[in-house]
Image (cartoon, rainbow, N blue to C red):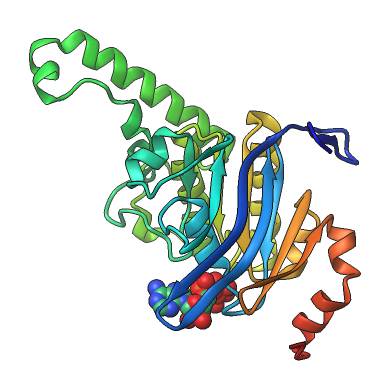
Length: 269
Ligand SMILES: Nc1ncnc2c1ncn2[C@@H]1O[C@H](COP(=O)(O)OP(=O)(O)OP(=O)(O)O)[C@@H](O)[C@H]1O
């Protein structure tokens, strides 16, 4: 597994992109993450699952660089990473979605997805005033990239619709579109299927698989519901009460007694 592995469906998974080494994260007296280690490989769909309060969101925030753990180390492409501002995270090629949808409600789908391109907009307002041609070329390029993503996620019909008018499942898809507009190498999804009905979950699963397949995007996602990620993920980390209780392929994890107990609510301390 040194340099990667081949999945059952024949996809090549590369070397380690991100490594979490003995991470411990505390909030005052609460230990949200206790001495957890795992890695994420290039091209992989990696899920972190666990019951309520297991520490998944905290872990996603450590991966994204928003939280710095009190103990342990996060290596991104082999280098330790410091706490970072959101734009610095974006420049590293990392984009994320949020559990509570974070879109601009009054703006159209198209404009919301455009905000994902901010890092590609090089000309500033003064350059735009004196050098209109360059600004226009840049705008065209960004619009084309956004339209491609809108087509890819099959949201053409709602491109001009204000986000506030959309049903929940579509809002989640628009959020995914905005994250993709940043052309991330690593995409972090925060409970992408939470609150969705069965059909919406199936759609979202298909889009996640398509994104990974089409763009080769490495995807790390956290999810409460064990069922939905099993068909989707290459490898799964299972957390419970801040600890890692399982890590492996979906089949390995499904048959792990600690995992079964955690999901049935059996205490194991
Ligand atoms: N900002 C914070 N301040 C204090 N405690 C926190 C904070 N964030 C999380 N916690 C605590 O850390 C523990 C792990 O929470 P976390 O939100 O990471 O779990 P989770 O697995 O994402 O839960 P859920 O599935 O309910 O979203 C919980 O006990 C929670 O109360």
